[in-house]
Length: 277
Image 1 (tube, rainbow, N blue to C red):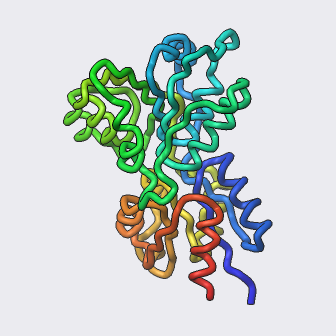
Image 2: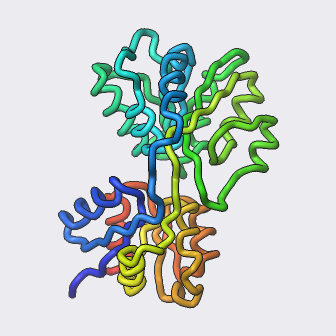
C-alpha cells in the first residue's frame, strides 16, 4: 500500500531539505511553505550590532532562521575574539545551525546552550531551565529574532516586560531576564511574510496540497496563511505539530486531528509511521 504524501509547511530552505530527507526515507512529501523569509530591512544597523554584540554575555536566537540571517549580515571585517558570548538556542535545530555557523568562522567549540535532550518541550521555558543561572544584575543579553506581517503578535508580553523591543515573538524569557536585572537588547535579523496565494502558481500549489490529508506544521503564525480556506475543508486532515501552542492554533483552523511530535525529520517519520500502521 503506497504511503500518503505529507505537506511540509516550513519556510525555505528547510522545506525543500525536509522533503528530500523524507523522500530518502521512503515518505513522499510536498513542500508548501506558508511563510516566506527575507533579510530585515536596514542591513547597516545589523552591521553595527555585530560590532557591539561582542560585549554581550549571551546571544539568544529564537530560531534557525534567526541564526542564518544574522550570520549572513556579519561584516567582512568582524572576527571572533575571546571571550565569545554564549549562544542560546530554544531547540536542537537552532543549536545545530549555530554550531555550524561558528565552525565556519573557525570556532568549532563555541559555547552553545540549549534545552536538555529529554525536555518535554523545546521552547523558552526549557531553555531557561539551562541558562537561568547565568543571568544576574548587569548581564547583557542580545535577542535575535524576526519581524512579521502576520496578526500573531505578543504585545501583552511586551507590556508585561516593561519594554518595547523590536521584532515579534514571545517575550517570556525576556521578562525573566529583566526580572533578574539583565540588560536585554533585541535586533531584527529577518522578516516573516505570509503567503497570500494571489499568484496563480501559488494558488494552484495550495489547491494541490488541499487534496492531501497529512500536514506538518511547526509555526502557529504560519497557519494565518490558511485563513482563506473554509474551515470545513480541514475536518478530514491531520496536523502534525511540535508544540501545544501550535496544536491549539491548528485546532482553531479546523484540523480534524492534531498529533504532537518532537521537532526534526526523524520524529516526523516516527509520527507518520504511527498514523499508517
